[in-house]
Image 1 (cartoon, helix red, strand yellow):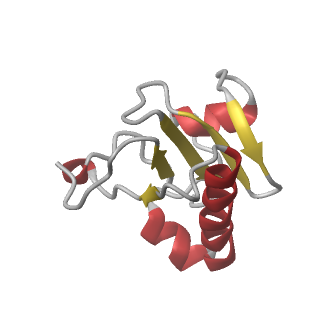
Image 2 (tube, one colour):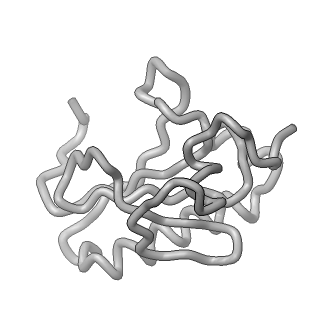
Image 3 (cartoon, helix red, strand yellow):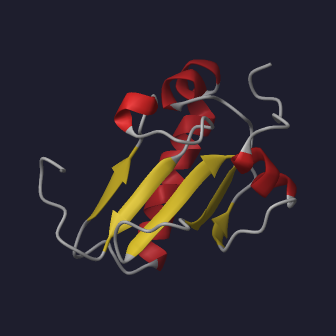
Length: 119
């Protein structure tokens, strides 16, 4: 069921404290932690504490929580000192777009050139 923890979901296990993560920011509805395979000097994942498969599902079901994820991503960028130089917030949706954990999450990337289009 959407919103409920999924036993086979890595990010649900992180939220539950069953899998360790380097948490850098948290709110009542979100959790932000360092990516274990960083693609930039700053690479933090921001997730809703509730399980939704992707950003679209989250936004459909809980638009205020989706806004909380984006707000938390901005706070992470501030904490990481990335606001002045710039940062990117990325939501991958579906395996073909690079989503490997099917729990909605935003990547906060900064600390290197992030020219568009990504490659």
